[in-house]
Amino acid sequence: MRQATSGLKVTASPRVANVHTQLPVQVTASPRVANVHTQLPVQVTASPRVANEEEEEEEEEEEEEEEEQEEEQEEQEEQEEEQGEEEEDKQVAAEFEEVSDVPAFHVIVEIILVLLLVYVLTRKRYRAPPRSVKLTKQEEDELLQEWTPAPLVEPISHEDRLLDDPPVIEGKAGVLVKIKGEDKVNIGTFNFLGFVGDKRTEDEAIKSVRKYGVGSCGPRGFYGTIDCHQDLEERIAKFIGAEECILYSFGFATVASAIPAYSKRGDLIFCDEAVCFAIQKGLEASRSKVVFFKHNDMTDLRAKLEDQSELDKKDSKKAMATRRFIVAEGIYVNTGNICPLSDLVDLKYKYKARIILEESMSFGVLGAHGKGATEHFDVKVEDVDMICVSLGMSLGSIGGFCCGRSFVVDHQRLAGQGYCFSASLPPLLANAAICNLRILDSEEGKQRLDSLRANISHVHSRLQKMNRFESSGSELSAIHHLHLAPNVVDSLNLQDFLAQEIMLDNLRKKALDAGVVFVRSRHIPGGETFPHRPSLRLASTLKTCTFCTHFAISASHTQEHLDKCLDVLEKIGEEVLNLVQ
Image (cartoon, rainbow, N blue to C red; front, top):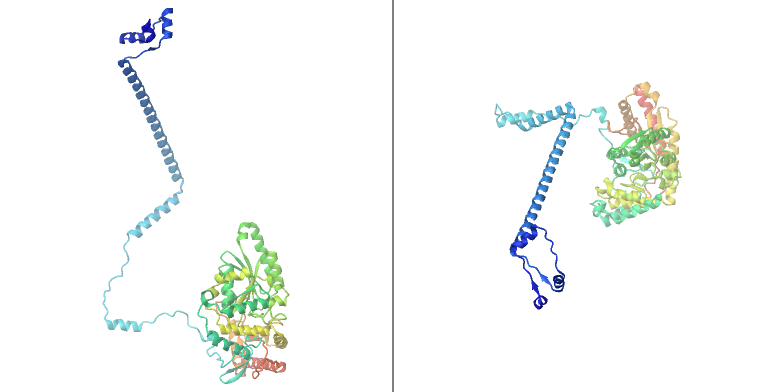
C-alpha cells in the first residue's frame, strides 16, 4: 500500500493497446481499487510505435486535403477558361454581326481607299524626261531674251486710270493751297476747324521734336509709350466724357482694328450699306456674319433684327453664345448723311446688341461743343459701346482713338492689331493734337464751331439751287456729295458709272484750272461691298487769316471763297454740258 501511495506507473503492452483499439472493453473496478485510483495520479505513456502511426495518419489526411484543394482549384481554373473562351466566342460573333451589318457601299469605299493607298505608295516618282537636245549657253540666253512673262495684274486702261497727273500741293494743305506756283481754293479738305497751319500748333510740334525727337520707334507695349500719349488719352476721355481712351498711330487702322478685336467668327454684325472702306476691312478681318441694312433705314434694320430674334428662339443655346453688333458712322463719309443714333440706341437695348460708332466726320462738327453724334442727339456716351475717331480730320493731326468703358477699351491693348503691332504715334503729332483739343475745348473753339456751321448752312442752301447736280448730305454735315442730276444722265446717256466718273473728272480738271480744288470721290473697283454713285465731294471748313499768329474769323471772306467755288462749278457744268451737246 505504501508503494501505491507514493506513485504508480502503468504501461500497457502493444498487444493490449491493439486489442483496446479494436474491441470495446468494459472494466469494472472494485471499490478498493477505485479508491486507490482516485487517490493516486496515474500516468499513461503510449509506445513510440503508436505515436508514429498517429502522425502518419494525420499527414495522410493533410495530404488528402491538399490534393482535394488542388483539384478544386484546377476545376475552378478550367471553368474560368471555359467561360473566357465562351465570352471570346460571343464577342467574335458580335463583331462579326456588326461587320455583317456594315453597308456594302461602305466596304467598297474602304477597299478603294486601300487600293489607292497601295498605288500611291508603290508608284514610281515622276522624273523629268531627259533632254533629247542639249542647248548651248548662247542658245539658252537667246531663249531667255525672247521669253515674255505673263503680267501679274491686268493692265489698267486709260479710262480706269483717270488720274494720270494728280495735283501736287506745294506747302501747307490748308484752305488755300499752292499748286504749280498758283494759289487755289481748297474745298475738298477735311480740315474742318482750320487747325492746319495754326502757328500755336506748329510751335508745339517744334518743341516736341526738340524734346522727344521725330518718332517713337516702337509699339505701345514695347517701349513705345511716351508721356504725351497718356496725356492725350486722358484729355480725350475727359473731353468726350468716356471712362477711358486708347490711341492709335493710324486713323484707318483704328476702326479696322477695333471691330475684329471684339467680333469673332460666329458673331453677328448688322452694318449700314454706306459705311466707309476702313469699316469694310474691319468686317472682313472679323470673319463674322455680316447682315447689311439699307442706308439709314431703321425700318429695315428693325426687320432684320426681328428675323434674327425669331431664329434665336429656335436655338437658344447658340443665341446665348452669339454676340451682336450694330456698326454705323456718325456722319457717313460716302453720303454726308447723319445716322439716327437715338433709334440705334433703342434697337440696341431691345435686341441685346452692342454699338460701334465711327465718328471721324462728326467729331468736331456735331454737338454744341463738337463732341460728336452723342452730344448732338443728347445720348449718353455709356449707351455707345465703342466710339472710333480719326485725328486726321477736325484735330488736324494723324492717328486715331477709341473711347468707351474701361473694361472694353483695355481689351484692345492686347487684341487691337493696329495698337499692338504698329509703332506708336510720333510725339510731335500727339502734342499737336493736344494743342488743338485744348483750343476746341475753349471759347475760341465754340467760335470756330459757329463759323463752321454758318459755312455749312451757306453751302447747303446754294447746292439745293443747282439744277444740273444732285447733292446728298445733311444740312448739318460738313461733307456734301454732288452727283450728276438724273435728267443730265439720261440726256447724255451716262447710265454707266464709268462714263459718269469720266465726266466728273473733266469737271474737276477744269475747276482746277479756274482756281478751285474739287475732289472726286474715289472707290476701288471691285473692292467695295456695294457700288457707290460717282460724285464730287465738297467739305466745308472755316477760314483763318494766313498772316496772323492768332486765330481770327472773317465771315464775309469765307463766304466769298465758298461762293467762288460754287460759281465756278455752275459755270463749268454749263460749259461741259454745252460742249457735249
